[in-house]
Image (cartoon, rainbow, N blue to C red; front, top):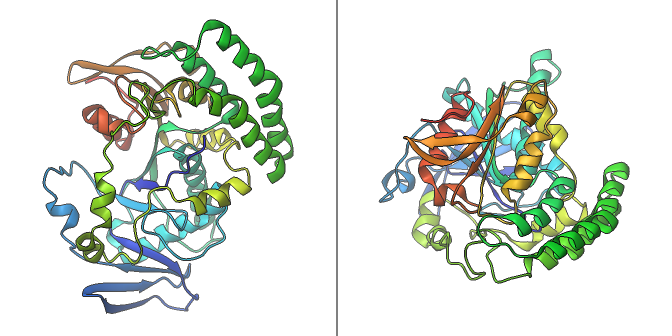
Length: 406
C-alpha cells in the first residue's frame, strides 16, 4: 500500500503547532504576535514539547454547512512534513512516531487540564491501520508506566479505537488485492484464470518476501518485501483497468472526494487565522521516503491491534466496500485475525445487516470489544460517501458499545 496518510483525528479541537524545545524545570506560558496573529505559547517541562495555539480562530465554528455533532476533535498532522507540520525529527517509522504523539497529548493536557478526564478515542484510516494500533498500544503502555510511577505524565483515558479502510497486515491484504479484484460486486478487474495466476505469484514471490520481513525484521528484508509485492501484485493489478483505487466504481481521474479542502487550507485567510507556519501538504514525498527506507509498510500491526482489544479498548475495523486499495475483504481478514478471547466466536459469526435509522447501510458483526463493518456504496473516505453510517459507527464506538443497528 504505497500511500502514507497524514491525518489522525483524536476524540478531542485545537489548532496547534508542535516543536521540540529544551526541557525546563517548570511549564512556561507566554504570548507572541506573528504576522497579525496572536499566539499563546506553552512549553511543557516534562516532555520538552512546545505548543503554539490560537484561541477562537472562528474557522471551525463558523464554516457554512459544517455541523459539529459531538465532542472535541484534536487533529494531528504527523510525521513532520505532512499537513501543516514542520521542523525536524527522527521519525522514520510508525513505531518511532508514537512517542512524539504521546508527548503532544501530555503537553495538551498540561495546557488544557479540563480535558484530562474525558474519554479519549483514536479514529484514523488508510495507513492508520499502522498508526491506530501502534499509538493506542503505546498510550496504554505509558498509562501503565505512569500508574507504576516509572514515567511522569497524565493518564490518557483511551476508550475507543476506530480504523476505516486500514492497512494492517500485508500478508493478508496483498492477497486481498487479488480476491477483491476478482470478486468485488462493482467492477471485477480480472478473470478466473488471471485470479489463479496472481494467487500463484503471491505464493511464490510476495509471500516468501513478507515471511522474510516478518522473521528477520530487518529494514532490507522489509523494503525488499514492499518492492516485491508491489511489483508483482499491487502495481499490475492497479493498472488492470481504468479505475480509481479509492473508489473502484469511478475512473482514475475521479474528482471525488473533492480536493477543495486543500485550497481552503492553503488560503492566506485560513493560514493566518489558525497561525500556521507552513503550507499545507496532503501527502508529501519526504516523509514517505523515510518510512519506505525502513520497510514500514509491510510490517504487521496485528499484534498491537490484538493487544489493544485484549486491554478492553472498544475497537471497530470498518471499510467502504468500493475502496480497492485497503478493501473490505482485507479489512475483514485483519479483524478476524485479531487474537483475543472472543476470536473464535468472531471468526464464526456471520455478517448481518447494519441499519441506520431503519435503512440498511452495510453488514457487520461484533463480539466483545471488537466490531467489523462493511459499508455499502462507500469508497476509501467512508464519511464522504455515507456520513450517517459513519456518524453512527463513531458514536457507538466512542460510547464503548459494539456496533448495532438503529
